[in-house]
Image (cartoon, rainbow, N blue to C red):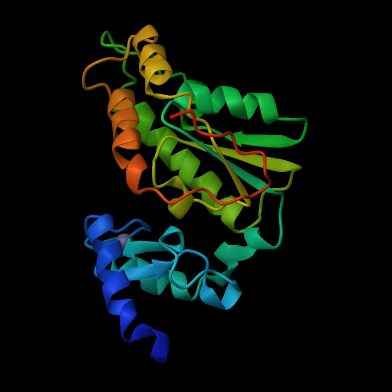
Length: 231
Ligand SMILES: [Zn+2]
């Protein structure tokens, strides 16, 4: 690929910022990923109107994944084809899932990791955790669904995608996003009610969410249905 002038100057600094933000870890994770990020990828290519400098549109990538992506323009079909995608993200998986169900109408697809784990009939272990095999299997199913969503292979009226990852907006395709955050008090109380305490992954995810809040940019307007944050 020819080097564009935009890649000179400030790009070097932004590139470094993104690599540091993402801990030099590849955020794409295609098969064959080396995980060690040395490049920065535009999630929505600039040729398709993606923002050049916006951190929300940038992610660290290993050379392998970045090269794979360059020719995969069909993975961006979701932007112009297929149903509208709503990203529902917040620190508590239960709240996210609940919100998705409130929004869902006939013909909507909800892509929710916990629901996939449950659908695989994963039983909780004595500590109230799902065994790793169900979590990883649900992750595979979710990634397969996401790949189909990106290619606009899933028909339907709408797609509701949930995530507790604070970086969700940089990782997932979406047309509008909704932040579901009832505030740390409610979130941690809910987790405790579910028996999730200490180093439970859900608790760690919520902590990670709040740890990252101060540096998160404001959410975009999207469809205007975003919840305001209560903190
Ligand atoms: Zn990679």
